[in-house]
Each structure stands twice: as C-alpha cells, then as structure tokens.
Image (cartoon, helix red, strand yellow):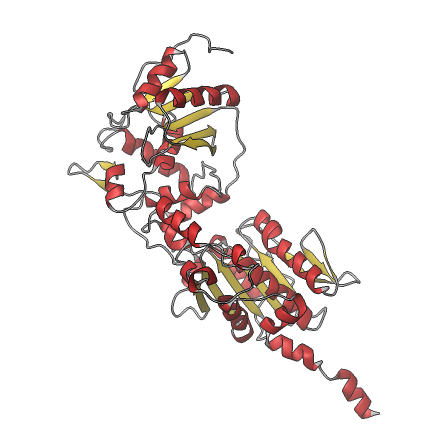
Length: 469
C-alpha cells in the first residue's frame, strides 16, 4: 500500500526532465526550433535567478520570452507557479508578448485558458499568469503575489522605471523564482544598463545582429530565417543611421551607446517622448526641410500641439513638385502655417507658396538668434528649445515610437560652444564627415516647432484667401 502511495506522489520524470531543459520542452511540446542564442537564454533562466538580455532588433526575443512563460507554467505544479510580465506600455504587454503566449498555448494545447485580458487561468479560475503595466512610480504594483515558483519577464526592459524593478525584486525573493529582463539596449543611464554591467549579479547575454543565423549560417528551419533580422535590413540601417549612431549600436550591435557630454538630446529623453501620449490639439502646422537631388530627402512633419508625426518624405523632386505636395498637405490637413527651411533650394519653395497666398514662413536657420548672447544663430536656438521640450521634467512632445530614423538623428546631434560661450549645433557637413547621414528628419521636426520659441525672420504671410478654400 505504501508503495502505491509513493508511486502516486512521485514527480513525473518527464516533467522533471522538461523543467531542467526548456529547449527540449519547446521542441516536444510546441515543435519549435530555438537557435543558439535563444537556447542560451532559456538555459540561463534555468541556472540563474536573474538573466539580462541586451539584444539587437529581430532575433526572436519576444518569442523566446513567451516560450519560457509557457514552459514555466506547463512544467511547474499547476496552480503553484506564476508568470508575471510587464513592459513600458500596455500596448507592448498586450500586443507583443502576450500575443506570443496565446499562440504558444494554442500550439501546445497547454492546460488552462489564456484570456484576451492577458491572464492565464486554471479551469477553476486560479490565475497562473498575467501581463500588467502598473504606474511607473508604483513599486507595490506586483504586491500580493505569493507563489513558490514565480517567473517575471521584463520586456523592452530599457523602458522599465526604477520603481517597477524594485517591485519585481519584492515578489521574487525565494530560490525557485526567476527574473528575465530582455530588450534593446537603448539607454545607458537605466537600471537595465546597470544590470547588464559587470558586478550586477545578473547573468548577461548580448545578441548582435551579426551573431544571428542569417549572418553566421547556423542551420535553422527554412521557415525561421525570414522571421530573423536580415542582412538587407542591417545594410539599410547602416546607410540610414550611420555606424556611429546610437540607434545602430543598439538595434544592430546590441550594445548600449556611449554617453557623451556633447549629446544634444539624451537617449532616455527620446525614449520617454516615444512612450509619452499627448492628445493632438486644434493647431495644425508643418515643418519642412527641403532637398532637391542627391541622397538627402525632403521631409515634412505635421504637428498638432505636442503631438507630432511624419507626414511624408521624398527625394529627387523639382521645387515645383515639392511645392505642389506641400499645397496638397495644407488642404488635406487644414494647415494653418508652414515653416520651411528657406536656405538654398528651399527658398524657391517659400517663394512659390507665398506667390499662391499660402501661410508660409521663411525659416533662415543661419540668421540671428533672438537670444544672440546665448546662441550662435537661430538654428542653435531652435534646436535648444526643442531639446527643452524633450526634457522629461517638461514632457512637452510626443513622437512616433516607430520613427526610428527620427530617433537616430535626434540622438546623433551634438552641441558645443564658440569662443564667446554661445551654443552651436553640429551642422550637416560636420555630421557627414563622421559618417552620419543628413539629419533631414531632425531638422524638419525642429522647424515644425521653431516658430513657438522665436519670432519669424520674414514678414507675416499674405492675408489673401487660400486658393481653393
């Protein structure tokens, strides 16, 4: 009789095997191939209480994290284990990681049910997994989790505020708990960066695009290769961002960019602006940086208060065509004012818009600053005021998180001082000398906001009615 009782409560050897080998579990339960760095991450979670993964773009990091979440629930005593995930925004929690968790649950026909509310429940309603986005300052956001086996996943970990890191530590105090922090290494001033550094107590794994199967030739199933970062994407990133760009170092090399005292807008401020939500107001203005031929592009940004987005960009267009596209934008977006870089070829666009009676300002970036004792020219003053809008203490601007080129260009801008102590901003020619692309998007964004902080350098636009209005 005692032998029967012992046999009944003996741990399932298959579960014990899978608990020690999530890669084997993924192969058998999900029929999923994990490439070498994914395997390293999964084994690190088995062996180490804390794992930090600083990763390039597109190596399958969210799929890895979701697979680990499903493995954790399936191989630990059901109802005694818990997976908690968080990310900088609710959209990242819901649409990225938990979408992958839902897919893994379906593929493996795993126990319980995964709801659209980002909860994994047993059949009788016990929660064994949840995705949450507590308030940034709420270090008690995960309080009340009392399970022996807790796995916490910090997705896009660079954007996780300090208070939430504290809250995560508070619910993973026993030896059977694990933390996985994974994301692009965008900001060297974050808790994620410190945890990826030496002496942090975290096991750190770095993934460069050049270590992924499409570069190394590692054997993977043919249907996996299109899902991983490609040589074409990396080459395009090199051309668009430049190898010295903070974005290239983060998204391609998987490295934290170096901090520099002469950086105009810190990476953390740019990330905060990407994550910020400011509702558009009733104003409608355009900032236009004009190019004609060559590698540079004409760029148009549309701002409505603190909310700003790319409208269009194009290349190889005569000034007449550029003017026509701006006229179409004015009518489509009900634009009240257009700020155009009137230096060089942009002057022709300004003239044509003024001739037609449209509300345009000729923005002469090389002209005198309003505060000429502090700034060498208007461009320096306009960019400095834009910098202040990014300052999290003010939080006055909301930029598109998907606009990587803008983020890269903003992060690459440098400032310095002349012999009289006036601020000057690195010019396009100087940036090209150090291998950086022309900051067309950054300039257009600056122009979109320039008139908020400096008087126009030309007369007010004509009061004639707008053609076709």
